[in-house]
Image (cartoon, rainbow, N blue to C red; front, side, top):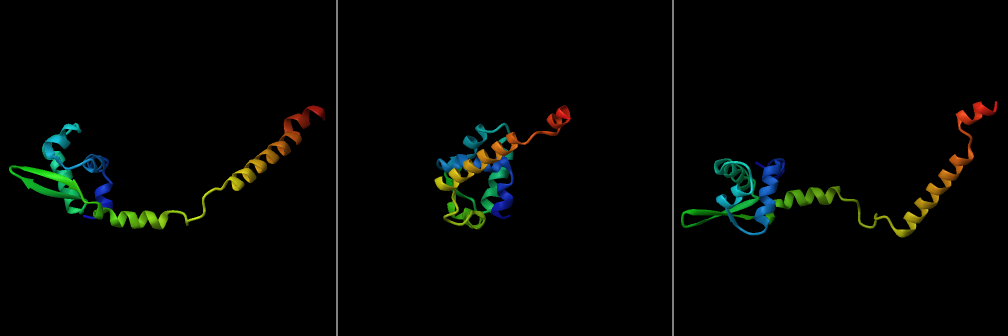
Length: 121
């Protein structure tokens, strides 16, 4: 499974956000969700298969940790979709937009509406 498919589920996204704070056990992660531990384990398995989480054995417990490098494909796509550098709205552009909006409002107020025109006819 790829990262995009894994991220499509809101529960898996929430698990990633939680694990971002630090490694966690299934029992800790299940406590944050209204679902059983086996259901949380299935979501964690998907995230591991997608390369978004790593698992380490500590005695009888499994600890899940974020693998930031697993998000590389997602980052590349977001970078491709981001507007080119320097296309931010500047103060000058916002001032020009404000001037244009005010001009359009004045023009519309100056024109009689169809209803007003019928009353004077």
